Image 1: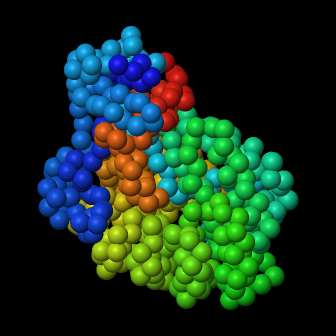
Image 2: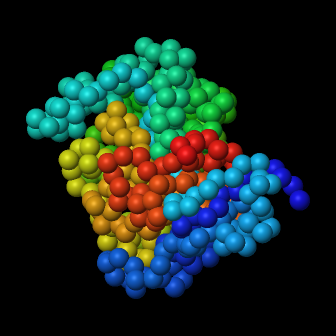
Image 3: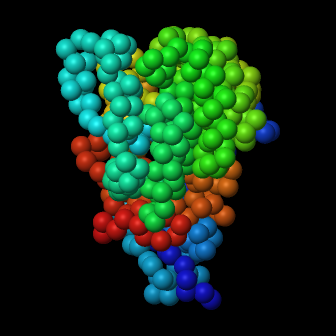
Length: 435
């Protein structure tokens, strides 16, 4: 028998993935309904949504999960003394590695003063109109060197990894011109190299309208100038647009996203955050990978998203940071669907921990801990078009896992005064060792 395996054994609880594919979308179930769970009500589901095992072990080899089951059985076949690495998880819980499917983690400058301005009563839109917000960060990013941006992002990735994130999407969008957007994407790629976290790059040149132009002219610039250069560069996987009142209209967003599709970039969209403009409907029309925010979306919008196989992404940290309303979970509960949950880490939502996002999803949105865990694991993977088992610990899935210092997965959202993540394994190797 090979000894080149990693073994995590004697876990009080092992989370392997969704129970009965609960709340997940797929080609045979475009509604997102669980085959057995849920009763169509807006209350918490009665049936389990997580598949868990007690006193369990998991074996990782060649970057994949090769076995899970009762520790006694696993240890007979895969002795701890023969393993390349053995992690004793007695009294602890083991979860799939976390997938943060929506961040703006690459930026420069500091906007902590805007946090105080909001506390004094200024709205996000007022701060933006005064030259703050996104446009302020744009100025700082344009001034920064690529090396400086790489270093800043690597620092954030290190913190995210320590909190259990093993895959993260990072958007451009603080350049708003061709040269700076390309610089950002290059920095995102470089920051992902030589460290454990898988980084998924998204082009978001249509994050705001830069100073000195208007939305129509800038839409032309994104579609005709930036996107061809981004495609030639070959780094970005997705194209995202901020479809919002006073930013990009539905028609402008459609033009940009379709231009991205023509160049091989799958659409994503910031939709219906402040106003129901029609972004969710556009996401469904274009079969986007995800539609994100969705605070103003209606039941009809949710139906359209789920029928089109678009993963809804909810961002409770944004509501917390803005002191605003949280997304309404009821339309998803009524359809037995579980949205993805992400941090939206950015200068306006300065939180890198998906565990904290899970806490906010529970307290602010009413998710159960099990739903929140699915939101930050396999549902996050769905929002990134990952179909290889990412976000689960089922046999054959990627060998990414987290050991938390608590007897149940519930301790991730339940314990919010510190980091309960003790050990992180990425691609079968220990990347964070807090034992």
